[in-house]
Amino acid sequence: MSEARSWASDFLCGLSRMHPPASSDAHDDVLLVVSALSSNAFAFAPGPFTLTLGSTLSGRVHVALTDTNPTEPRPRPFDLNGCGGLGWHLINALAEQTIIGPEVDGKTVHTFLPW
Image (cartoon, rainbow, N blue to C red; front, side, top):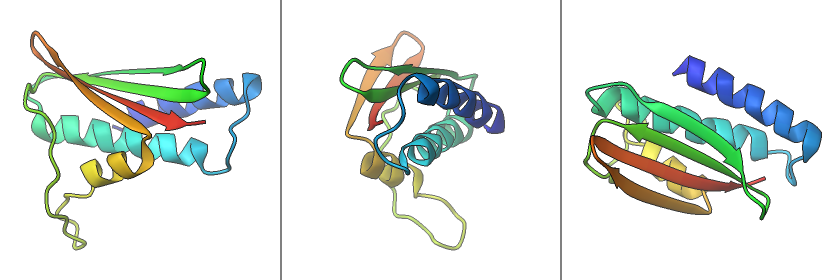
């Protein structure tokens, strides 16, 4: 998970040099979504996951995570005592759009965040 976050941070630093973010929170928001998606994949998918990042022509960051669990994510009651449940709520609060696409051996969660 920390490797995914580190790779995403490197991507965002490069993107910032070409196209600075519109808000001071954009970088951290993307990293929070990457952390939540990778944490969920680690916890709920039986195999590896693939993280892909890109930028769109409309100035958004596209974060896509493919994992080996075909079940669509759904909100769970969250527990502020460290038992989880915040990830999917956080993802949907920060992303402008979230799309879940089925894959042969799992699913891909696409999120689009403002940059």
